[in-house]
Each structure stands twice: as C-alpha cells, then as structure tokens.
Length: 323
Ligand code: NAD
Image (cartoon, rainbow, N blue to C red; front, top):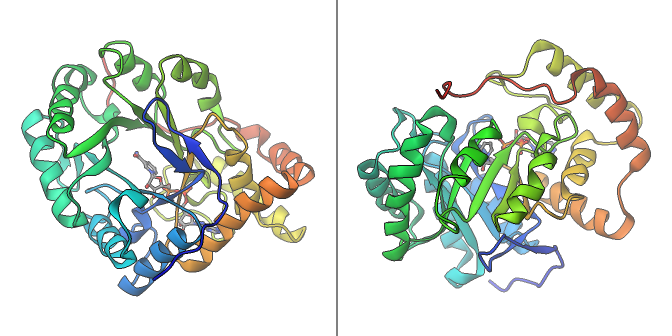
C-alpha cells in the first residue's frame, strides 16, 4: 500500500535525533482498557494513523495484560513499510502481576515485548511508572541494565515514566549525563493540570526529550467521560463533565480544545493520545492540522479554563512514598 506524505508537524525529541509526529498514537486502548476493541478496529486505527502522518506509537506490556503490544505489532506489520518509517516505544517494570524493576526482569521483558510486537528493536524503552518502585533501584540497577540493552541493539533510547513530577528530577539528578534520553509524563499538561510546564526548562537544560501523554486526562476531557477506574476525585470529574457539557452546548468538542491546548507547547515533542478507532485518529490529527492553520479557539479555551479553575492542578496519589 502506498502512503501519501501528509503534513503533520514533526518535532525533535531531546538529543535523540528522532523526529516525532506532534500527535503520537497511545496504544493503551488497543489493550481494551477503555472498553473492548476488535482486532479489525485496532489494525485500521494504526493504519489510518500512519496514513495521516503519525509516526510515533507507544505501548506497554501492562496495557491489557500484553494485548496492546500484540495488537500494535499486528497493526504495524500490516503497514508493510520499512521499519525506520515508524518509531515505537514500549515499557518495562510494570506488569499485570505487579512491579519488578530488577535488571533480570527488565532484561527478559524486552525480549518478550519484541516477540509480541514482531520487531527486532524498539526505539524507546521506558521504565513504567517508577513511583511504584525504589527510585534508587531505578538509578543503580534498572537504568544500567537498559544501557546494556542499548549496547546490544535491542533498544535505541531509554526513558522513564510516572505521574508525580518529582520522580523525574530525582532520577535525572543522579544518573550520568545522557543515560536517560526521554521522560514520559501523563495528565500533567492538559487544560485541567499544566504543572509539567514548570519542569520543561530543567528538562531542556538536560537535553532530555519530553513526551506528554493523556491530553484528554484519560477521558475526563471527552464527551463520553472517563472510564470507571479513573482515579480523579468526584469534584474533578464533575467539573470536567460540566466543561464538556458547556462545549457541547456551544457546538464545540472539548477533546479538540484539549488536544490543541497540549499541542500548543512546542517544548513537548509529542502529545500522546489514546485512540481506538479511525474516527478518533481523524479527529485528533485534524485538531493538530487545524491548529497549525487557524490557531487555537482561544475564546472557548478561556471559557473552559474558567469552569476548571476550582480544580486546576488537582491530581491524585500515585505510587509509594520514597524515603
Ligand atoms: P487520553 O487522555 O489520551 O484519553 C484516552 C481516551 O480518550 C480513550 O477513551 C480514547 O478512546 C478517548 N479519545 C481519544 N480521542 C478522542 C476524541 N477525539 N474524542 C473523544 N474521545 C477520544 O489518555 P490515555 O490513553 O491514558 O493516554 C494516552 C497514551 O499515553 C496511552 O495510550 C499510553 O500510550 C500513554 N500513557 C502512558 C502512561 C505511563 O507511561 N505511565 C500513562 C498514561 C498514558
């Protein structure tokens, strides 16, 4: 199949030399974590994403108990394009069975992930939600193990992910320069919570690439609302519901306003949004191309921000306390 050359913006990722599409494909929904997704829908979503210019795909063995990696692998294989035309990140250390950031487990984990993804290497391997492990183990054991995987050619770059922003500075202040190439932060650069902004100058000074995930706050900023398991407080959920209803009443879509908010910060290399249908792919790519052409809908954004002021930057606990 031939693909056109669409004009979705590419942005550099820290010092890696990679150029990521500004909209990234979050594959957790392909693990049916936001509701069931058929194999057909999973494969068509990946195909449509690539067709429209998305070159970055993120997954984890944790999503859907390995289902997301398998679905993404099938979708990528079905593209039938050379391997260097897309960028894949997966993760290690978090599994349905629990957390294990030991060198032994993460070294085995990458081989399992590569088999499920049907790939010889991944571009980025990230330690998944490090606030649930010992940060000193991440620094002294996990990252050194990942550096060996890099030397072995199984991964090209190393990343860390988590919700509390303090975990990034803790690790980056302790590893050798260049040992961590990328951070993936989630739910910290969306209309309701923009606390990642304060960390961006520090990350830039370290040459670390920034991926910002969950621009829709894991479903809070959608017309359908969040899944059952969403950890937000009832207050935050109802404020977002009110904002979504306000947009709908006005003939606007809150998801588009939210995507454009996150995409507007060019220090973020890719905004990773979870997608499980061709329609969502098309909507999210349109949000980016319309932003590039017309700019953001500042009037509606200001109105939504006003509704969300009482819950601005409200988050939820994640992980274990570090001593
Ligand atoms: P998200 O904010 O991207 O929201 C996803 C939800 O919004 C899904 O229900 C999806 O079907 C829906 N959606 C997507 N586009 C829509 C549209 N245009 N209109 C209406 N609904 C739409 O949250 P997410 O999926 O959790 O995050 C995105 C990706 O980032 C994940 O898939 C994953 O790859 C990554 N992520 C990583 C971590 C981590 O490493 N700790 C945490 C969260 C997310």
